[in-house]
Amino acid sequence: MTGRTRLCSIETVAAATFLAACSRGSTSGAVGTPSAVMAAAATPAALVMPAGVTPAMITRGDSLFNANACSRCHGKAGAGGQNGPVLVKNAENPWLHSTGKYEEIVATITAGVPKEKLKDQTRLFQMNPRGSNPPLNDDQIKAVAAYIWKLNHP
Image (cartoon, rainbow, N blue to C red):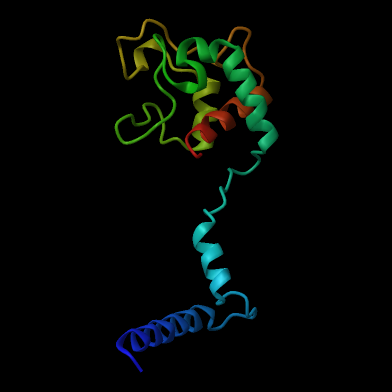
């Protein structure tokens, strides 16, 4: 056996041991197979949406957000505007009035943000309750909140 053959044999044994360990206790033989391990590694974790949120709500929220007062202040796709902060959050741009949970987004849209409670006092206008004129109804608020939540969970 050459050095290269011996090395390949050691790698094969190590891989087989790893796969056997991964499949231990499994009721399906497919879990530990090389193709199953590679597929699991290549597949991103499925996005778990908040309770009650559906893809149809997110699509409706996109339409409502980008066709109404939301985008006039917060910019298209929540990218930020003259009168409203960016709604796509990251380490350099944290949430201002919540932690970004769906329920908190719903609450912020429902209650609005009075001028005196704005974190950025350079903003000229408050965020009106129900976020628009005319005001959004409960289902519309939930749809817009679902869209904003999704912007932050690609």
